[in-house]
Image 1 (cartoon, one colour):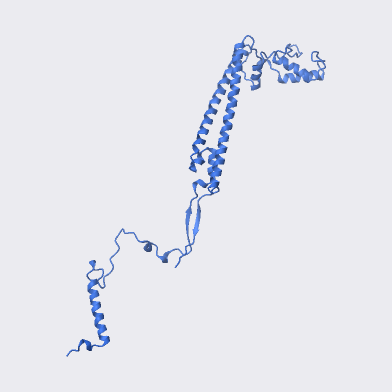
Image 2: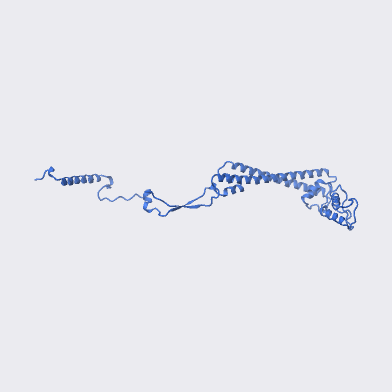
Length: 300
């Protein structure tokens, strides 16, 4: 005769309840698709191509113990070469700094270069013009008139109608300078006599006197020699054209120098502007790429 349920002791009832609960759990887990919950089933392998999670990719126990390093590139708009680039090519540094005023520097650079090139062309054209007039008109009677003189020589041709002769008595053994003061050499000989302290410029002292020798040396050094003699006599129109060419050449040279000055100033202002902008951004002096070293720390 079996015992009644209420006759079971506390331990026997607990064992029966535990058995019933275990059986229900096994039955419920057995109904999960794929049998993942069956007792004793092995976990299915991870599908191929599925990326690992952050915790799986870098487990806590595999983190570097002492630190990690990384390559850090400086900002391009904080480097030392930005002002230098503006000094070389105005506006380039402003373009790197993303400033719209780089267009202004570039426009000024282009305008000054074109202006200088244009005036340089004018200088060459007017130079060829006055050289041709001097050779073909003022010096047409001189053998070897294709010799080129200095710039001061052509300026003297602009101011004086004739050069005058160098020696009035060539081949006699006695040097006789030009005395016609309407010519370049005649005015020069008068100045030489005055500078040599002649007692009377109209009366020559002895030929071998120190005063006469000093005047002859001064005259020989600065006077126009026979191979460079000129005369604009009976060629007044050509002389006027010659003087106009000289003036236009001088004006073009002056404007070309002004364009060069503006060009240099544009380079300087662009470099200073880039320097100040970089400094205001907290840059300048940023060197090449650097390596930063970091020590990881874990907070529990």
